[in-house]
Image 1: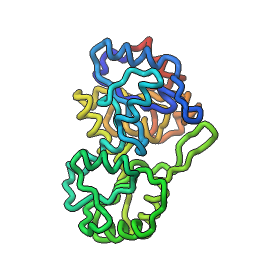
Image 2: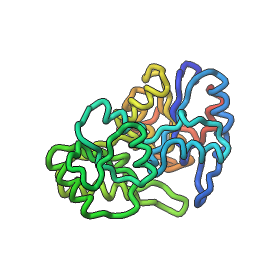
Image 3: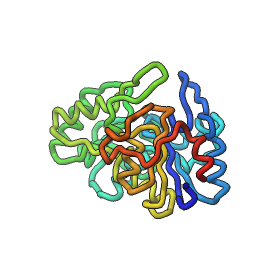
Length: 267
């Protein structure tokens, strides 16, 4: 039973929605589950590792699909990287491998984003990148060799798509930088301490009294395990029918259900 849970974290793709090309379709029970949680007065957030759009754009996409969520209820690695940078206080500017829309988001959040002529780079951040810019890669590698941390939204090599795996361009860029510089990538999306900090701040409840619901054992369940939350794996997405007994402890969910509709009897 989830009546004692004070806050909820939901994955999006494969958990609350599924994609068919550019279109989003709601998973059975998704609308009712979020409505029942909201009616109970308990907070929830949706956390996606997507980093090619600002959080508000993801929230609008979810609303257009039929889910009642606010901009503040949508978290991404762009939110958690802000927590990391503010917590660790790296000097200099941020050399970011992102698109123009995300660059504007970071700048509006008060993060000094490095331009072409800015030599004072304090950290490197890789999110989604559509082009390969070798001079920029070389600038980043030199900054890493001088001690700048290598931050990445996700280091997963691919994620599930409608027609098979979609390879992560962010992981490709991160791997290239790690190879030439020897830097160890620091994940700021799911699962990471930065993501836990973002969740804790947004929910405003004790982090050990939340439930994390998702379809990926290496991201969603691992995030819940990292913060001591209750974890629920839904098998309608990436993981499918997984044998939990063979999973390492950090990926093993407390409960497995076919889809979020099963939660209605527990709320």
